Length: 169
Image 1 (cartoon, rainbow, N blue to C red):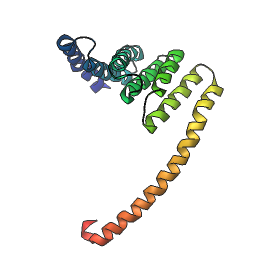
Image 2 (cartoon, helix red, strand yellow):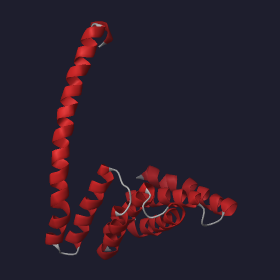
Image 3 (cartoon, rainbow, N blue to C red):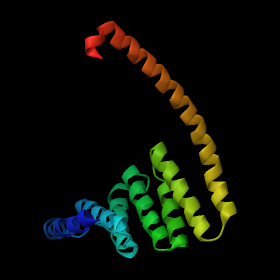
């Protein structure tokens, strides 16, 4: 955690330099704000994390659109910080924004997990189940397929090493 605190100083300086050089609405300001928010989130200083993730998300969305994957990741991180701050309704709105983005399968699953956690924070376990159970079942099937492929790849790699000889293994 001490390293996160130490990282804040140059990150804030970098953000301020970007604002001075390129203006307060530049995408680089979004990147710096995201990293500052990440540090505050890691330190569990959620209100400060929310402040910086909000700036990052708004600027990135302004430049790259709502459906951009990075915009979605920024919305997901914003929602997670809002969860940490106990602002569950706002977190759900951020997760809805993240869900509209073209996220990777892992990020999409993380959005659903965080959304379910926000529903639990609102004392709505049925809504949490409705969000998470179908995603869990879908991921379980994907994991079975991936595990089978991984085992097959391991056998083929073993055959490759055998063909190369023991000195290559």
